[in-house]
Image (cartoon, one colour):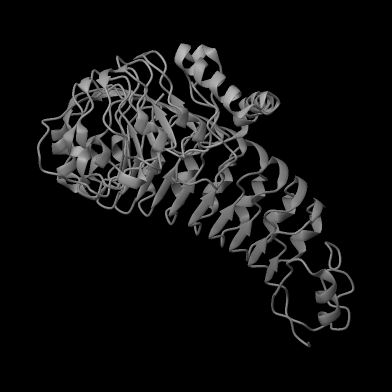
Length: 510
């Protein structure tokens, strides 16, 4: 082949060498052996290979390069300062490598750059001020790194930016006021840093933003009214901060109608929301987390059913006093958390209609529930009923839940015999209680999207109470496999250790 305008080096080096007459596919021999007048290299893709070692300083000689992808390799060391010589570069992908050290200041020379992804690396230090020179940049990904310091004021120069993702770093300080210049932004993701201060009112509304994630920071103060006036916003995540102030339903304007996902959990808000009014005013809402938000939720138990497409509802510690009848229409609900409320009496007979075959997580713990209906959730995986006033015999309908992996019925008033059907539970149900705090999350695991939970481990033993201690004994005797049971106990200990390295992307409840 006489000319080579671009090539993609994927995995089969030998075949590429034979076809193009390359002397060697390596860092120092990226030129054909037999031709001297080929066009300069403009595309270099070495991603998803076993490439290791450091990026050589001579990479800066490829001055016509427009696309450089070295992602998901074993590259280590620092990004060479000569990277700033690639002034024609438009796409730079170094994600998923072992690169360390600081981002070189020369990165600011790449004024043609449109995409920059340095995420999931060991890069540290501060984001260089020169990042503001990349005025053509549209996508900036620095998530899951060891970057620290403040977000530079120069970030406001990136007026073409559509995605800013700085989540899971060690960033501190308040948001720079220059962010107001990012009028083209669509995705703003600053999750899991140590950012603080109040949200600048001048920043909102953003005309094109669809996704805002400021969760797991130290932001405080009230929410600016403009935040609820972003006309295209569909996902707003503000959980695990120190926000306060009153938010009543009248504070939310009609322009908020299109929102699909709303997370306000673990803050210090005040205000009273009527559940049915909220659901009817936001017909596209499918995910709502208000647990430990400080907000109070009441229900008028209207018979008008809304939001049948709802999938996740977290209302833990929202001062609910009755089981909301509006849940009855939620046929696709997968996660429901009504724990730590003031719900009294019997769970209504129609509760089995909630979620139907979709419901997988149900937490009704720490209420004053006295009796249960016939369970119809055959695909339920997590059932948490601890710390209620439920009496009577062991609910036989639980025996139909063949998918259960976590069952917590401790601190109740059950009496009578344990049905033999408990021996038919899923082999993975060896957990009778669960910890008082959720497992830590692994910040490096981004592949598990908003699909549910990955932790499965809780303690096992007579600490669950007499009933569940008997269940454990029954399983040992009925299966006649004490050795097998000891192996289960060992595996529980192992999983308790390894779950610290698992991420649960959606977390509803305690």
